[in-house]
Image (cartoon, rainbow over the protein chains, first blue to last red):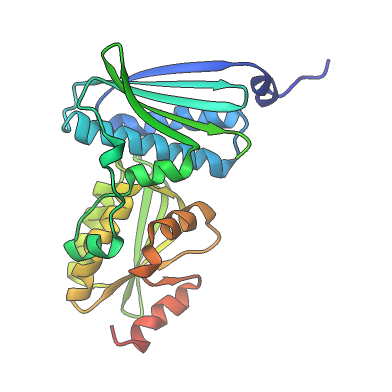
Length: 151
Length: 121
């Protein structure tokens, strides 16, 4: 019997996974490890897996730092769904929502002059996934990111 | 060897330039340790080359640490320069965020070291 690689099977069917963590950066390496495994088994190449990892981390960091104001005892749920060649990642939280319309990319020369350490999180997500939206449903705020295998 | 946090930091001094070699991931989890080492190194010797050839990826927190200290190094008569080659994801992140406008990049470590002599930094 010829065994079909798991990644090929996944391309043809849906797979999903959900992870619940506290709002603590100590959990970030574990979530990224799970994200990397899920993306790899779904058929994404190494570079795309790293782009997915960066996007997940940026969204998680935003939630921990801004939505939860660095409190470590809050809840974040990360949902992965791979269906029809598209990886959907939804990060849910109950903190302060983020308004993408108010986000402006910072000028790097200004950041350097002011010795500021931030400003590229949303910018990197937008570059590395095909779609980024934020919203709210049933009491949960969320970041929704989609990345297609084709890109 | 990778430490438990997923970032390995190795420091050496070559011709009065401190080379900080990073391997693993420079992210929100590992950036605080890197920041401490970078800050201490600037106090000891502000002529610094970051060897990022073996970095898996860098996130906005890691970028922020470099941006936050480059002026400190320059104010002390040095600079932070980057040695990077054969690392397409990290090169892409630096490119799209505009880092080449504020920091000198080298694809050869020795050229980076020599640049501190030729421009008087």
